[in-house]
Image 1 (cartoon, helix red, strand yellow):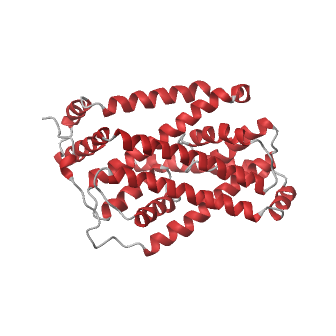
Image 2 (image 1 turned 135 degrees about the vertical axis):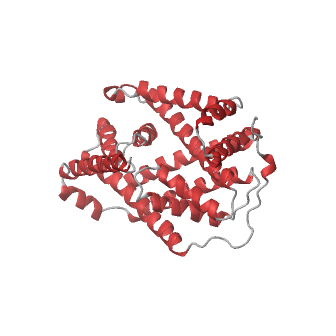
Image 3 (image 1 turned 30 degrees about the vertical axis):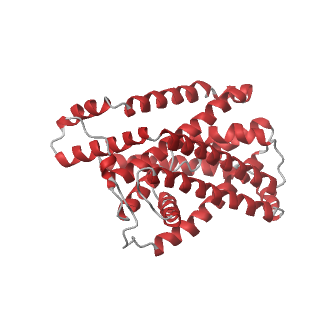
Length: 332
């Protein structure tokens, strides 16, 4: 098993490095360096601020999901946990590693385990649905521009599969199915933890208004992300109608979800070039926008998450108030 995981990580690393090298070897460095020298610093600062705004929006959404479950965490502390998750996620082979870190630190902060993990799970699902919603809209409005990639069917199919899958998962009847499925596992503690987590996720069904509001915030996150790319383009005097950013960025994020590279590295840049060159953007411009976005994101992550990781200490006060009586009871 360990050898298999090591092989997969090595394969993903090769894919990421290969894609990045291909891009770096196919750009005109003199023009790229000239663009970097002439960049509008003010617009880059706006892009960096938008990247920070996206992080605040994500923290606000997560805070909503926790508050509705009677868990109160100071916003600044939750923002710090999010930042640490992003920081450590840089060194993990999957984007899910970020969620694992977030859940771990929240539990470490005296939070009830099943509620903490379920909030991260629901947060992730809402993010996926918002991205798929943007993606479905994009593939229909992008029209002939993306026909050569033949991805319209896959985006729509993925949306339908995820929607049906989560609908089945959130059905109360699924508890019985999971119980029967887990009968083969002899470790009672593992079974109890899985059932507790599932019940905790189902608890969110009682709060449709909060879920709807959280979903709207997630859509706003997608908009903020698109604007970040757009202002980076303007900073390098690259004038492309903003509508194309709204069409392509969600699709790029969806392609990044395919687990073939380390954290989407290389895949994001390659897909960005593939899409935006369709509308006349040069490879040089596409690469510089994509790399600058990654640079700003990593820079903010290192400053906020790296600093937070060094100075973070679990709270010694009882800042979290968990009401476990709200859980859905497991069917016997």
